[in-house]
Length: 554
Image (cartoon, rainbow, N blue to C red):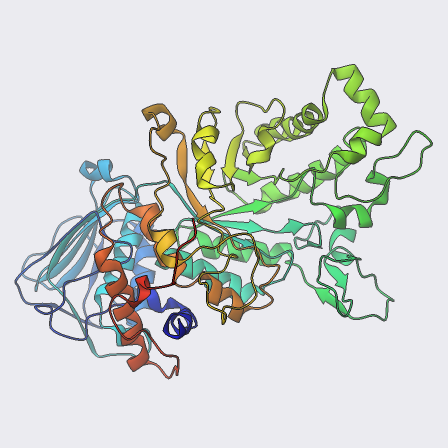
């Protein structure tokens, strides 16, 4: 158990790095995630130098070129040409419409001693090919600037299984700085993940600047620190003039634009989450006039749920959405919608009146509220996605679902007829402990997700029909931060499970071997140990990563 815990403490990027410190005759080429098809050739390596030209045919290929330059630490010269060079060592990026069956994120990579040829039908595919090249380079390139780099002779054909391959991050409960958000996006890109689900709003912290409602960050971005209490216990917003200690932070609109632009260059889409109608205690402390009232006009206790009969609730959220869609070009906007406490609606005189007029149950009132914003987002050219509880009542058929329940409920959600992203809580909640060791740091006690459990997860349930399978957009792992106070703990919780997530989101169904993955990740860590100043231990044997626990709980 000690060796496992030590492995997970290893700083980060390392699980994706190249693992070829010995001749390839001894060790096969291995990449995370495993490519669709990989064939190592018995031929000399391609030697890459700072003078090696990169030949492109279109300026849209430049993001891949810039990533290659960052990876190699070489300012490789770039030239534009529509023709393949002959007799000249070069790296060549090409669009090939004939590869559209691989999707725009798929690619082919052919390396011999004379050239590196990357082909794809889209810009993302070229970028992901460069991320694969990164893993084929000597591991020391991540630390040192080298005069020459060897790439093995190989042929790779690759394509992703799912179009949505995501990582979530809750910055409401504990705030993370902008520089780390960018690093987090780099981690996603390295693993060929393409969606960053930015959980900007929750009950105890509002993290996005909204200029039309400045109180949301002037007050709502800060909470009073109360000794001996968890952040969510007796939560109270902090206001200027309060001498008690505070905690918090928020992202300005300028910072958000920087993050979105940074992610775009790495082919990561940033999907923001703005909670409604629940998980909004912080908003209702800023604007208590949005609380429900009883028959005597007295405000009901703050249970984090907007008054669904108050036009001002809708107006505030429409104002927020108006600014959000200008900041985030993503097709989807996440509206939360989970764990809505409907008790105030049952006591609220005006909500009861609305329910009688519209012939609604409390679940129906929830749908009434959510469907309003489904229509509003469509008027802005966007789509609504929310946690699976938005299925309560009668949900708009155009809404999409993010499912966070157990694996046994996936088929029931797919049966509902909506597009679905699986953030399956039994397997893909990275805030859960990843071992049963007594040395495991404090974590949310709602489950257990070892590396092996994540890697072995098959998202599509047995017996799913072809129609149900077509509704599955992809998978996403969540990291809620109740017990993740800082970057160090966050990285501990993410790694190495993000590598397993990349495998299940990228590899085609039925192609995982399992036997190589433990060795692959272990060897990467071993190489890092010898190429960095880290003092962390790594496992002592190739199978140690898969010997995670004394028992496995489902």
